[in-house]
Length: 311
Ligand SMILES: [Zn+2]
Image 1 (cartoon, helix red, strand yellow):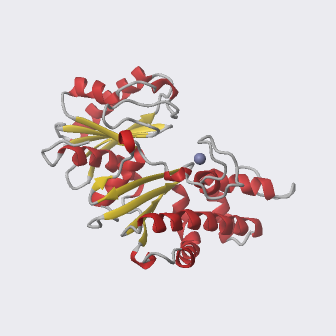
Image 2: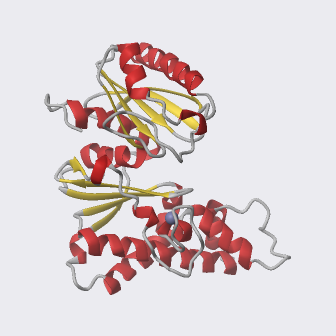
């Protein structure tokens, strides 16, 4: 039985996941982003609790974590949301504490593995997973294996260039996909365009903009059209680059996918003329709010279940 740990910037979820991807138990706590030793103690406690609730014994631990992580060494990298965790090594520490094999991946890669193994991408050999929320995260699976760049790096497709005249992004580009199509970009655009007397200015969010669009609010409809355009450009690039069997869409922005999907498909149809774009299915993630947790378990199965560990 695999213990799964989903480490996010605001909370850590822990659960027991069986070999079919079913969640047998789940607990969570806020992420102590400043103090890694405290967070490790929280994780240790939650693993014991989740195992006890499910009535199982741990045979392995899989981790999906926000930010840059080194899947080979298990070390948490620099420039992440977990300021007090830099240089820490949850893989090494949990191996010592539980004496079982532990594997860790970036959380988007973990979710991609889950959708490829147990979700919407089952039985598809080429899959791109994209999650749209406060940022844009991606994972690429080819023939069941996670695609990696040099030095086991995780490709940052959310930071591909979409509009060179767009806003600056900490990655170094101006106008990368994330800076134009993630949830905060939608909010920022509405805030910049709304007249002073716009009644919905307070507490505006991507979710609220989508609700307002459904009610016919003119500015929200424009924001949805703009969002559709940028979602479509980035996804059309993915189709042209990979021509995958399936692109799995996830994240909070995709909770309103019905507002965007027709427009996205139209952009792909118009823009991907040199590839058989109709072979690429565009589908929504199927594992729901537990995708990242299930993905963390899939990280372990991906690494160890074949009997021949590989990174
Ligand atoms: Zn960027």
